[in-house]
Length: 355
Image 1 (spheres, rainbow, N blue to C red):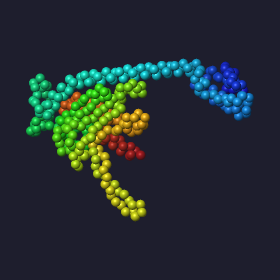
Image 2 (image 1 turned 120 degrees about the vertical axis):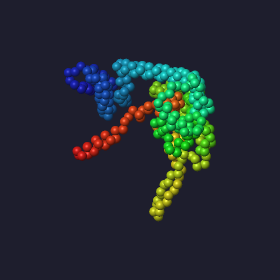
Image 3 (image 1 turned 90 degrees about the vertical axis):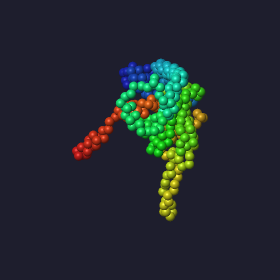
Image 4 (image 1 turned 180 degrees about the vertical axis):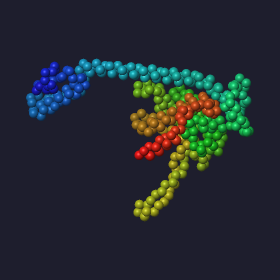
């Protein structure tokens, strides 16, 4: 049978098992691929149903037939080359992150010395030395005037003020968290070599809320090359157990729920313990199983990614620039936007009047 799409056009005839198939060369390659297989299978189906003499062999044309053609083979080579280059890029990225992490570990000692001096002044352990004193500005004069009434040594409420002046941390914090964060003395960072990652240490003074002196948050970073990731990947984060004193756990609350009896219709109210929004949920991250065969839900991946962003925020912005947050001299993203609620309301009212 001659499967011609158009008369008087240049075509190439292919014959298989006595079936003649016409391949139209002037049609674009992607169209030819679809029509060639479709028409060939239609004819093969007809031949099989009519019981033509095929010696028991059924006709069927698949993608594997087309994959062997020269244009497709060349395209496959191009795509495989691009994949190979992507894998080499991933290997180079992995090496970059390893060396970057090693560089951060090397410099962490020098940074830690400066942070220790900063903390000594904040806690009132020592008085500032002349070489440490920078030029005063109007902002610092105003802050000093407001805090001059405090008789406490050092700089009281330093880290609590940092939290208040950070849009990100202020959103995580609740009013009942503030009395606890008042006792936060310092936040330190510790870089780990194996596994590759870092640990955040939140140091607290003795307080009436929990027994811990230090609350920790640990992040493990994947150093294995992965062509499907464009950045260093956090694959695990570990929190810590907070030893809350009786009735002081701000991460839990008593919730009330009304229930109706199915037969009598009577209503009762029951109480149960439920999760409560609090900054201290930061120390209770999502758990990722060690077994890679266990599927992790997308929700957990999203929570893990968000948690990692907060950890990076502490590491790269809050800890090194704590004084600038304390003094309110760090412009954050939210400060770049102005409130236009009034204008929007006026536009809405004018639109409704037109309707």
